[in-house]
View (cartoon, rainbow, N blue to C red):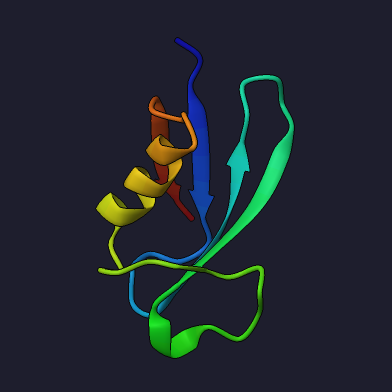
Length: 72
């Protein structure tokens, strides 16, 4: 099973978490997660609750189940 990586730009899940999703083929997608109080763009993805587990579920819903979260 191919491994995906989500490079988190911040150390904690407190209101927003910007990051890059790296695919096994080397392509990168930008994923900006926010809580409902910090949404300021249609590109932002609101998580409720705002946790790594919710982000993991978001990726699983897109068929990405083998993902490693890497904190900058």
